[in-house]
Image (tube, rainbow, N blue to C red; front, side, top):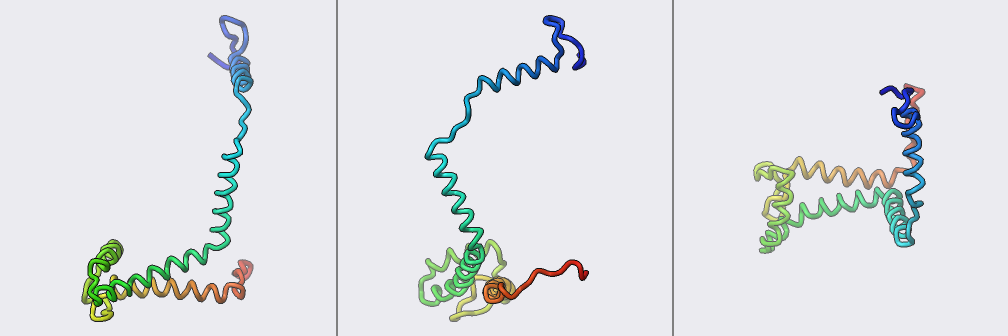
Length: 147
């Protein structure tokens, strides 16, 4: 049936019938109002997201600092005789690194929780984050007109 054809039962076009059905549904739906609790939750989530957006560099550098510290904490704990505390750190870092002893630094007579390459990557990410904090007001956006 084409949209311009009339309905066999009532003589109206199919398009007119569809419009009337949509309008009837819209009239029967209650207006959406949000409760006070929902509004408070949404405002609270907005504040959390805005706070994270304003302080993203602090969160990233804090995470990298903790990650780099735990690379040194695992061999320190193992050397101090707390192998049970060091084991979860080694296992967690084993998810991201091969941890081969011949490619790992030795700290306190114990191998580090990751290889030299991974330690250099994570350490340089942390140091570059600190450098960016120090220089971020001096850095300007590149000019694309000069390209």
